[in-house]
Length: 166
Image 1 (cartoon, rainbow, N blue to C red):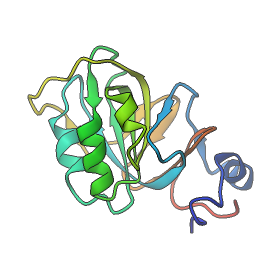
Image 2 (image 1 turned 45 degrees about the horizontal axis):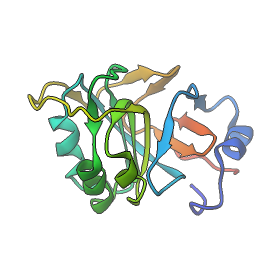
Image 3 (image 1 turned 135 degrees about the horizontal axis):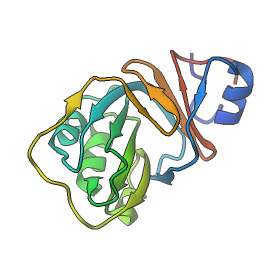
Image 4 (image 1 turned 180 degrees about the vertical axis):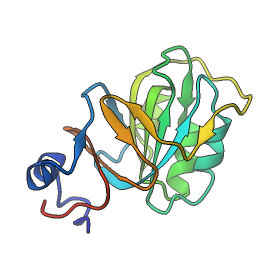
């Protein structure tokens, strides 16, 4: 199982589990007060529309990581300070957005880890389009619901399950 949150690094996990892990391309900004986070993956696929993201973060996170494929859109934010706070309050370990977020300064004060491609002040649409619980692929990595994601200051790893040997 995962060592205490301060007892592992992605570099050490990679070294101990090489061949078992995928390494995401280093394209993500690291936001949020939680710089290191890990947990089982929950997935959402949307494009410039965030009601599914809002609904997921309002549910009990139970230490999971919400991975959102936003199609790499840099035109609107899929997560802002209110959704990040909702995720933290509901026990989500982190949020990875293949797209933008907003309210960066406030998110940096919230006890949740956030990774994203960038920031924009523009909000998303509110139509509720998208899919949840589907396999995703971006940044050179496959994200399957139930797989494990590890993120720290060096990057993001994805493994089929919990890792040992850090």
